[in-house]
Length: 271
Image (cartoon, rainbow, N blue to C red; front, side, top):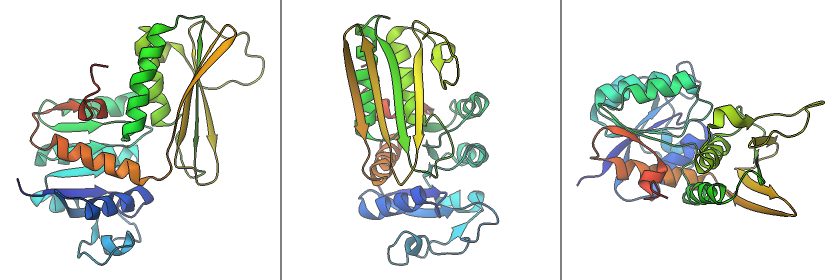
């Protein structure tokens, strides 16, 4: 099979540049396009140069329809509005759409899922092997421990992150809720301030820290009578997410239409 031709959405951003480097460092994929927001001062710049590589002749453009003519997939770590704008074009062109964008609303996710009867979408709040293994373990532990063990999720990210809790924290919360057989939406406590009263039985708590240049730190703590169990993951460089996204794209190339996760990519869906 020939190399998979990939577009990087948000190519001028930190994650976009990491994705460009990951493609350049890997076998089986080539950069076919570099998408950037309309009006960006980076439009027309060389994607390779922006990523700290030699010039590759791929200029940043806001025209996804044009650049996707000869592409096979798109790696999309942008913002909700941009991702939703990309969904219809990716589906129409038959592109594998790898979505790592966080902060998506329920209606955004509904739009994404609406195209998966005819398009291949791989969506995850975190593309790393370690985090997805952590989610599988969290689900198992939550199932094994009853409500006498409270669940608290703490995440830390760099000062520039705009959404909270992180997509990874919510993914871990979903894993814990699945293990308990409950709805995360009905049991999440996403902020505490003032006189909140005693902790609700079965609640899954979230706390978000922001500062510095932290790539991502997540911990899930099970607090029971006289003991605690903490499971954690520390990301040292965002390149791990870029390589995970590239792995997802290559895995999805040629798959039948559907909505997939990194658990599917890594063979963890049944854990």
